[in-house]
Image (cartoon, rainbow, N blue to C red):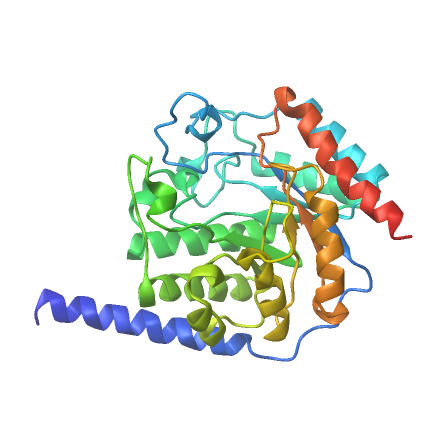
Length: 335
């Protein structure tokens, strides 16, 4: 049998299995939460890019040692708890020495025992910890050598192992954020190594990840910007079980294709956690909440997520504190 025929048969088999996994997601939903989620994203690791890091883009470099300030981490968690936030999304990346794949870890990465201890502390503060591993080929530098094995058998096994292990470490969390944003050639134009999945291959890999999350007993959660470029395909193939985080960080909500995605997701019956950021504008979180509470049906609006997009380092303390305070003001105003 020819190599091409074998490759095609393998691809078809994986596609069928992914489709079956997606079909299995279409089942009655669990009862919706009684209160809105008010979340904030914090980074254990921020090795997201394969960027050559021109001057001024130092944050986008890959760092072989963990860049993380534990005092700031503790201060931010305490500030979130006192401000009545109730959820923290933790971007783990290569910041943990996973038992299934310790080779991924950077120097000084947390042990699994350290992670468990921190999760216990987070829950005692009244915050719900949610794991995030971004499997977008635009943001998977944290996977090390496996980021250059995308869509191979080896890659699928590593992804499955990590989703299973992290889900267990987090005691079967309500959500597992899979990332999956910005996988385009334009977003990788300064990368040293470029990988872009398209068409059926993107869907095959995405649905594989979704299936592994559900196999681990957690609800998959993604960034929704694939919708911006492929709306027809998105609504035809995206399982409703997947929680959606459309995002927009500007201030013009009046006629914006990015913000219209909130309306489109609602019209098609998807649960949403709209995402804002103080990356560009300090008023973006308030404006996002104002827009979305008027446009998204309450039963589909699970909550909101703030994303500072800065490493957890002392140099960015004020930026992180401002991000939390912006959420706190909105929570207080809604009482």
